[in-house]
Length: 124
Image 1 (cartoon, rainbow, N blue to C red):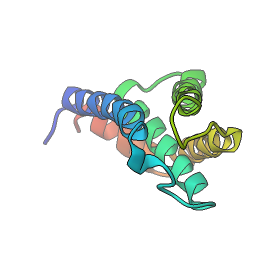
Image 2 (cartoon, helix red, strand yellow; image 1 turned 180 degrees about the vertical axis):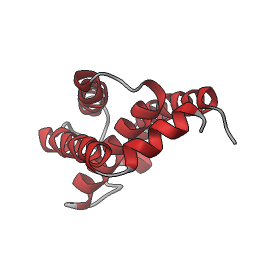
Image 3 (cartoon, one colour; image 1 turned 120 degrees about the vertical axis):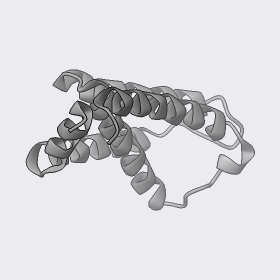
């Protein structure tokens, strides 16, 4: 069985990889129009909800950080897109990310997912 410290380390690495991939991959020409409307909003919700769950594994942050960290990354991504050819900042994308984080929070708090996260973080 994998230890709790290993779970936290792996989740931390995945958080860093997510952010790096978002900014490096998002700057590539292939990222322009990668997802058509309205699927781009679904992609934002899933991506930033997943980041929030990874943060739960890595840090078990306080509630305000659970929301603030992925939403700050989402905002930075939108600002970054203002400077990329063929890309644009979109507040609706940020809002879709916020919905994804809220869904992740709800799933963690109101299903067995948080208990599973806790068990994995403890290595049991």
